[in-house]
Image (cartoon, rainbow, N blue to C red; front, side, top):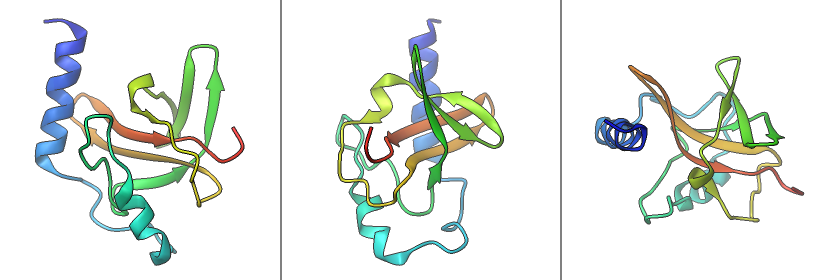
Length: 114
């Protein structure tokens, strides 16, 4: 099985199972909920809600973006980087869920000014 097919299977399974993060983070700003819900994957599916998206530290490497998830730098698949410039959070935003085989990133919004 190719890596791409395996990645698609894991991603589809994560979508079907719903978010494993049950609630917004502490001190979540409810005024941003509509913006979080507006985030869409390239195929038009909702990629997150305030319950599975988080502000995150990020960095650009020679091969693309990495985002800090659970204390580890995690590569962001280039097809998950949203081409949006309206990020009101002031930080990068990552929408992800843990799975049995690792973290699946649904969407990544670059921090402002990048």
